[in-house]
Amino acid sequence: MDLFEASEAEKQPGQPEVLTVSALTALIKCSLEEQFPSVWVVGQVSNLSRAASGHVYLTLKDEGAEISAVIWRGTAQRVPFEIEDGQEVLVRGGVAVYERRGRYQVIVKSIQPKGIGALQLAFLQMKEKLEKEGLFDPAHKKPLPFLPETIGVVTSRTGAAIHDILAVVLARLPQVRVLIYPVAVQGDEAAPQIAAAIRELNRLGGIDVMVVGRGGGSLEDLWPFNQEEVARAIYQSEIPIISAVGHEVDVSISDLVADARALTPTQAGEMVVPSSELLEEKLDTAARRLAQALIAAVRQVRARVDVMAGGYAMRAPVERVRQYEQRVDELAERVALAYRRELRRLRDRAGRAAATLESLGPRNVLARGYSITTLAGSRKPLRSPDELHTGSRLRTILHDGEVESTV
Image 1 (tube, rainbow, N blue to C red):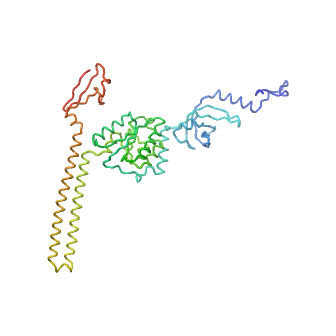
Image 2: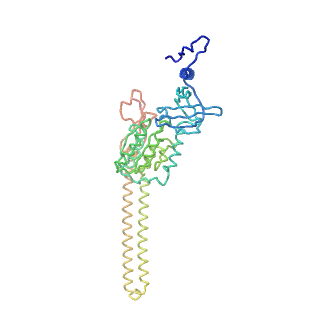
Image 3: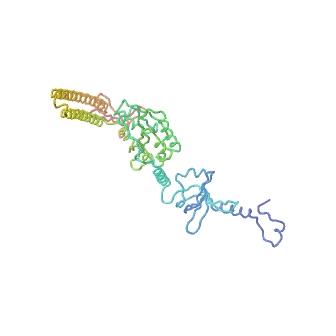
């Protein structure tokens, strides 16, 4: 039957046309949906509820009125922040009529907090949530190893971050083993891949420290490092983790959860491998502590001998006391000799380590006849003639100067 069809009695002359409830509701639905296909509405969220289907239902209100709204599951899954009662929001959507109840509502296509960016609000909400759970607690943070044998790196295979880290690490300690786990570092797939990589490196074992990060970028580019699954993977890691997200001003959730934060990937490389100066300082400190321990041991033995010599049983046999004194003197001489020998060994070892690190420095490499060629105005070394064309200006760095040339 047509929605606007009336009964025979209703069609009598002089009688008004009578509509069914469904017909009237359909007319209202068509009128509203045609007139308001897309509108922007600002209001306060109330009566928020989430159905098992994933749809979100809420009411938008102000001082004078309120209107129902619904966010279908597909749209709700893309909202980066947590919608809460009391929030002032700006929504875009179309007006529709729920015919079964004769109620009009806004079908929300996008929603954002009023006065603050959606990503910034999502960051603050996630930070507050994880801080309450104790994920930022300094007591949970693990110390970094002083001289690691194996370093795990979770970052992009092609980004600048991996080159910056390797350049520092291998220049300082060429013997170190670096295990690279390539992942996406931006986009929807980045967070699951980063979290999975952290868990996989923990499962493999044998890794002393891990660097997780990427180079700089916009807030949207860096967003995977603010995701909850990445934060929890870092927190649950048994391997100490350095967060090296290349943004010096802003702090990411990963920075707060990690055992240490590096402002840049280059600084992360400096943090995982000590410099030659620090290595020598550690060896000197160890030598001093050894000497102090040996001297303390000698003093303790001498004190015990003095106590025994002053006792009643030892006062008579003076000769025996003298024998003990001679034995202490011999022991002191042996300790002093051992101390000097160990100190000499440690200094030789430190000297060899420093010489090795010094020989691997860039200036010594250049002194052996090597050179570095870059395009003029760039610091990136040339690796292939395919990067050149006629007229390219080149800059060649030698041990004691530079040369500019043109192809």
